[in-house]
Length: 357
Ligand code: ASP
Image 1 (cartoon, protein in one colour):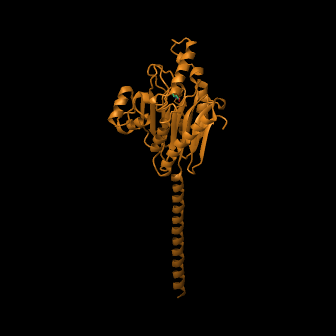
Image 2: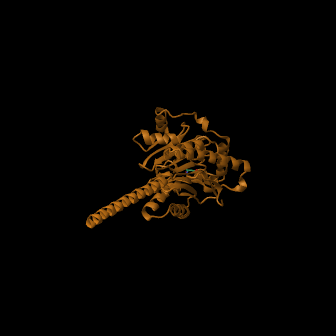
Image 3: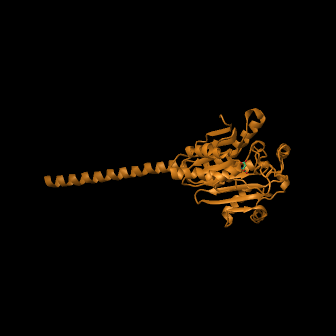
């Protein structure tokens, strides 16, 4: 009888142990799920509206308020998409559309003028989950070049289209086509005239003359966006009119994947703005990603070294906005200012223009 009792007690004890093991396994799984949920819920967005000699003393309170208002309007569009579970690609495209449609920025409406008084627009977009990318250069009639870049990525076998061919593809894809006059703004025309006037005092025929940094570094005004969505996917995009008084179908860094735009889920998403030739030579956007990937440094460390050391030592000016796959953000520039804004998962908004903010 005693033996039976001991035997039954043993079975009961073992059964209880098994049960508690299961409970702890279940609770471990639940904790893990909660953590995954937390990580997946993490999202964020960062934008720029160009970098350059942007000084408070040259800015009226009205103008400053107008820039901040537009930056906020744009970033809220992207943030809402991300909050509702939309993709980072969608957020990047729609955020940039707001900036392209505003004459305040050098992209879409308000693009700077070429030496001939025309507008030639460049843009690119990259999907960090697939490393797929699309870019367009020298586009003259497409209202929102970033949309065309996305079309190139999604609906063509190519990464980059240029000039008339890109325009033709835009028509075939049913994108909004506008008369070139749509891009005209009085302010940008005045900038062109000012640059040309200043160049008269220089040897205007020299091939380098129209890139005199002092003359052209008014403010660049390109727009860009980098975003992380709830699904853990990173994307980046950039759109621009290029540089005032550009000639010979010059193409800057903005449509060059790796220079003006780069995104990789393994590292970060980056959009650049500044003196394009230097960003191309430094492969700035990709270099930041590569430093994270190969060196294991943080996004902030990588951005700082690439902009403050490498780009600066090369003689380049400008900046980047970037976000990594954990939602950390970098807004690094070596100019007096950069129009910028960022919003995180909690909806906290930060807007900046000048260096000391
Ligand atoms: N990076 C652009 C370019 O060189 C200009 C800018 O950022 O404003 O075309």
